[in-house]
Length: 440
Image (tube, rainbow, N blue to C red; front, side):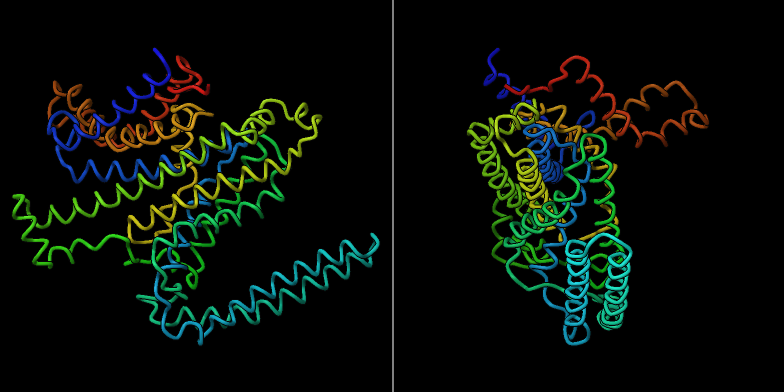
């Protein structure tokens, strides 16, 4: 079987699963197009994340487990770009917050300048400590009252700076730029590490990013969440109140509530598909270019590539920034789909593991494999719980309704997700270690 036929059949299989989810109410399929489109939309977003990770790992061999940090920054970009400014926030403390952040950055720059310009010794250490201490005191003196002023503005509904009020679609590339900027700063310090040390560093940095978003209410409202964000698609309730839309839904024999839901989700599906296809095309062109061949040469043998005059560290930084930018775009898309930013839901260990399963199962180094893995694994992630419940109900059918064993197994059905993901990963690594669509 040729690679083209195999790829087509696997994508056709995933498409059939989604169609069965929407059209068949049997076994573990819900027979709901609403559910099918929701799975498809999040599968498309997951495929974009997997594509970004595949650039880093499949092209360059960089083991990044800080994916959720960059996804969270993409979500934050939606708030900063598309939400309306909070009335009075800038006058009550917004300007002071910016001044304090600039002061903090200048303090770090001054400390670095002292370290580079002065001769090693006790005097240099004393001067550096003095610069950092004075800068920290001034920073806190400006920052703390400014934050208190912003967070005191209608804390039940606002309490943060808000955004620029720009069109929400601009937030998607902005999310990529914000993640890319953070990746550049991280890469300048962490890419000197290798393998498991890089993984530990990126995981820790992702935790720091998410901890800041959870606790800095002036920035993202923390665990109080930012809701009602602008969307490129209309809200369902607005469509239900539109007489023309209701009349068209009636012409097709659809309930206005169901019709509005399907209309919005289908619109997102089309937009997400366009973004995925553009990124996939760009990734394929990069893979086939001399730059792509160079990256794979660096991945396979850094010493040989460096001996041929390639700047390995610079190329690693380049691919790290590009992959993180794609994850940031996916994070902005996911936040737009939900119409809210919920920092408490970004779980680095859980969802980073899931994205890595998508890349490995689909085929590391193969862009189409990453997309396939994103769609397939997300479908299984959603549907494994009803599958597990059906399986356990079948196994325990002979036990009485009051059986403690039966009750315990039924209560544990939700945990079948993690068990199944681990089992799928083990089976793929055993029987197809290069993934369903191996790198050519």
